[in-house]
Length: 61
Image (cartoon, rainbow, N blue to C red):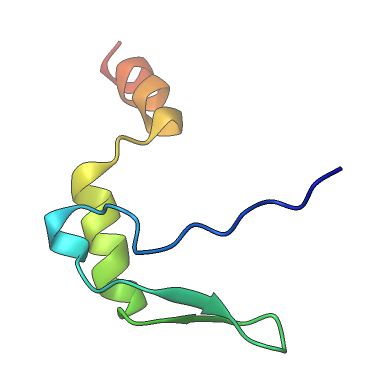
């Protein structure tokens, strides 16, 4: 089976995340170029949580 070819260049990202980079160090820890709090705030604003959709409708009933 042939090896996967590495893609050159940077992937396209949302304008608010320009410069975001994530790597895994030798100890298995994530190292990012953004603070985790900023990343979580971005995700809260832009990503809909599928688990909370059902909860919100059941609370209204």
